[in-house]
Length: 108
Image (cartoon, rainbow, N blue to C red; front, side):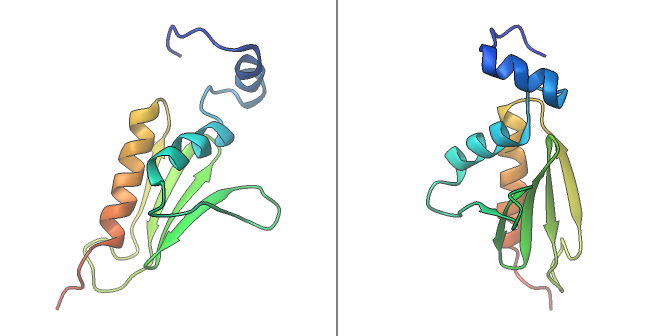
């Protein structure tokens, strides 16, 4: 963990979740990046949050982001990549990976 001063609420979340990058905080940071390009969705139990675009998914799961491509005939076909989140840059890398998967052209 960095030398940043934690707010009391964040400290309780670190104790509860075991990491400073719990799902709610990841979601908040990710929403700053996605702006109007994508929107976050929640499962029916509000357990996890995700983005869906062009048969690609970005899931927030227990302090990490998972990016998955379910498309055929692209470089990333059926590929899943996990990003453990330790800082804001990790969130940005995961989102860029997701965006690149959604924009891949089909191979011939």
